[in-house]
Length: 127
Image (cartoon, rainbow, N blue to C red; front, side, top):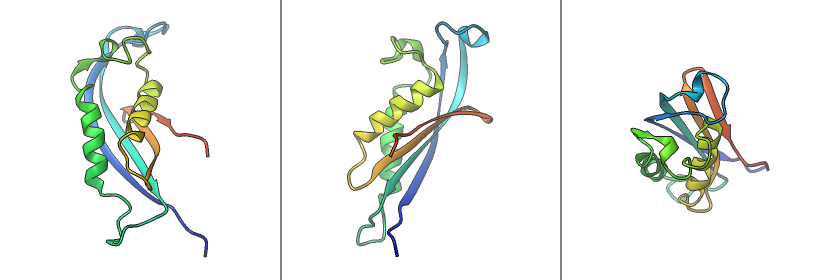
């Protein structure tokens, strides 16, 4: 039997305003979202309790990151003061920051940022 991969996903949210620089349309103007963020962590291994990674570890890490964005104007928050605060860039930023916080052997597999209930951007690294 080949080994499998365990995937754990945590969903949380934050509210923030932004404007997309260089966008030809309404989103160039100041507007806000109640963003939903899904962070998926993977591991091939379980510890002796049968746990890949405690959900609290993932929740705490992502909530720490989002605290700096919550109820803010993203265009004034680093790195979005120079990087367009698109959903795509938010997903990549959160992925890269979460990578620093998740202990091995688990790893961040994917970050999905929902700007509305029917529009999302996802960032993952190629295998």
